Length: 158
Image (cartoon, rainbow, N blue to C red):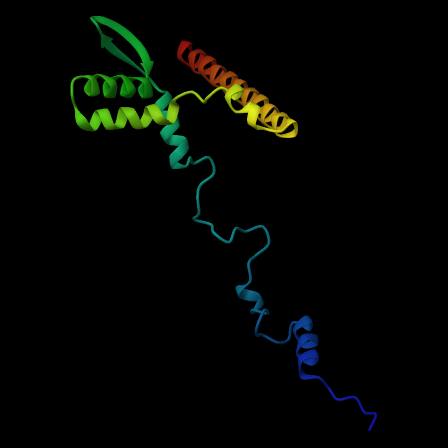
């Protein structure tokens, strides 16, 4: 009675390791992914840009606009904001709605002094360090923008 009974699950696992069986989690060798070959060969090409990147690049492009009889060079985004502002000021309801939505998004944050008296000392430190981090990030982004503008100007000179 001390005989061991062969477990069919163990036996199938041993056979699949040898590669003789084809089944669950063990496809035929011919149909397996080849090493070094992508599983999606017609996928996104390297260097292609997503929609957000294209959107922001187009917004940074420079255009020449006539303002008050003078030619000004500005970004496409700035030109669109100016046009929306002028349309809103002349009474266009949709432009006014768009302008005030943009105003809500871009209005400056309230100063931290108004919030600080209600916070504990620990929370004040957290808020202060967060604001410092955001300011450093803004400076980094601004310097990257300046560097990209300089490289664009160098390309234009060539």
